[in-house]
Length: 498
Image (cartoon, rainbow, N blue to C red; front, side):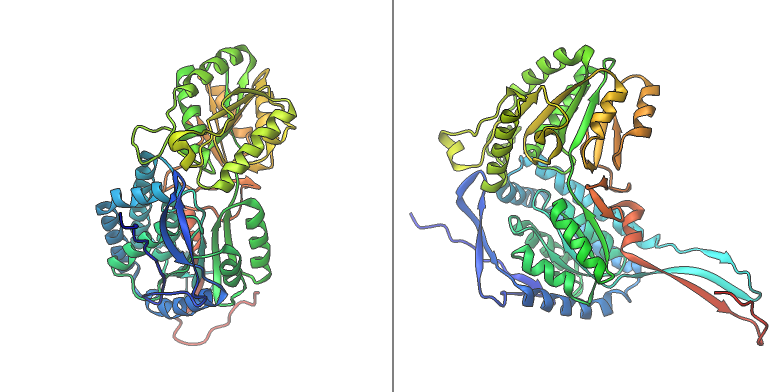
């Protein structure tokens, strides 16, 4: 039998698919079947990044002068193309990132929703007029694009997160250098192909694959890059934000999470359990908004834990390309090793391993990075598994005597991305909303996700800079210019002011 031919994919710079200056490539493997090579990709360096920046500067001249409704037309067309290719793109996500195909299709739909919303902003790029304190003077504001923007994205949502940065940036008239995660470059290639087919002018979108250190640093250090939109770890994002601030760049950074759900004794238990199992183990827990902590009022704690274990035990585990699978492999060996390390830490810290905790082996499991959904009970807030982001299918369960204690536990971590409470008591729901320290708050719903027309982001170590999505995205990707026009027929005395 002939060996399967492996495709080598290129960077996209100035409207052309080109090899990297380094002349090197690297392979990406399917996390469910790690003997399968998804493709070879360019191992780009700083010189490639700077070539992309130069191309973006040229593309910006055309794109910034293109009327926003015309820019919207291209984004709408990209959305239509993505709809036609939805199954193909979803299979690409599952093959290189590992998530179940149903979750991948949901991610594609989310990207399309983002494109639709952003394109609509092409006719809502509002400024405002206001009376001037001076006679014969008109005062108003307009929006301009930032300029060249670096887009740096993670592997866990390789289509949706790039789309929710790129579509708003493009509708605002910016030109982009797109640096995807090294683990999921094929999804980035597909997304770039879609915008190319939609008619985006050369240089407006440039794709550079490879290691984040060299390419990302080049984008931060280049004086021609005026803004950076980053999603990734808190450690990397903190450094990127600090280095960008030294160079007076606009930065938005969406970082880690340690999201908690509070279950009160009056909660609809069936509804709460469904949302928590989905939030903790869907996409193998590899979401920044995944549920990693559950804080249960003591009156229902034992009942909750019993039913949680029972539901979790029924989840099916395997290759995400199979639509019947609930939990798929972790995205890489590094992720698997990290999750297993934290499971070991939890056991050493004295938490009770109530379910799971093993790497799966035998048969098809030997080909991928599989870890059982894992539940720890008897967890206390000072444990590392209670405070640190694990980014895998590990759920920690706490007991609280009442809502105030539960909120204290929820607020005891450095992260503040998303949170949830399950209760039928509207007074307690509002007490929770007004005191929990997270950027996104849910009542009787999972911690997951958000809607594209609302701001997305967190507090503390979960993010810094402007929120993503909604009108906040337009605020970040534009500069506001204030205009004064004196239309008097002749010179008049003007008030002296700063």
